[in-house]
Image (cartoon, rainbow, N blue to C red):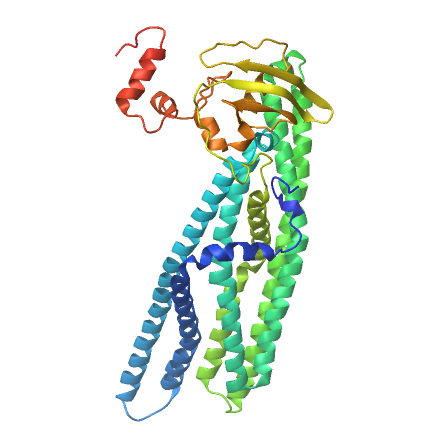
Length: 476
């Protein structure tokens, strides 16, 4: 059985199977996805081309020429081109986000609705042994995980990898192998260190979260039992206990802060070494006349452009692991199969005399908990029958069996000589009216709750039902 939720401390590895689960829902809009990726490619091509325009601007300004018109016209044209390319990057990115956003939102809608419908198909035993809050968290975390995964994997990680390949290739072709090796090596080192440091840091984040929860729990528990604390004059005891929890939280936060410093400091060190090495190598080539000043600026722009999206790599890596786990857990709900199912050739229930018969019915909630042992009786149409017994003797169970919330272990239940196991559950329940033992209301208006019995009823019919069921005439 799958866990009801996927706590952060259990997410230790990335399970790419979860990514495969959502692909069928994404490919509903193949043309939209293709166009979105086309815009993504255009965005990255424009981003890579931008430093070349900057190089041309610098080289033009640096060039000495007696012609006074050229230094004015050429740089101005290049500056306008620079602005146009930068604008195109934003425009293509916005088009990409708008197109793919629709795909993601539709996928979330489809998956959420499918899980919701499936949960209503599961048997009563599943819901009685499962916390409703846990189900809600699974759905919320799963859909949020899909949104996060699409936003960062498609719009951050994949484009960055594509840009890295393009830049390394350009540096190798235009400037030689050393520029390409330094760039590629520094990026791989940066990624490896970020992943390693993030995994180590996660332990301290969990400690801080646990300490925070413990201190809050202690404070709330003490305040809820305010009178008891006063009765025993234990204010100081409670304060000391609360401070002890706060001390653990303080120490955990210190470790958390130090680990963040190590992560950010290590990343900054790698970037500094990479930038210094690249610029030093470029400066040497400029001084030797092998490169222009524009080439120096281009290399600096490329390095800054590559490392900027990697700044959030630690956060993205940690969240992607959690998102994939939450997505897998969401789809795990769809793997649940109801124990009560319609038989392959189930027919619609047909009511004639409305006679109910229990024939030697046996039922138990577990092997060690038999509830009903060989009970048999009939209720003819129009009869009123009361079932009397001790608490836990199986009175409510009879109704649950009649509704087929559970299947009998032995014997049969028939309505007009039709075994309820051989008819569809929907047709069976549509023919049964019930007033629950406990008052159950949805978090809605009285009108909406009465209308729930027949959503197709009009307002007049609903008001008539309310007035007819009231002990006294409702004042208008």
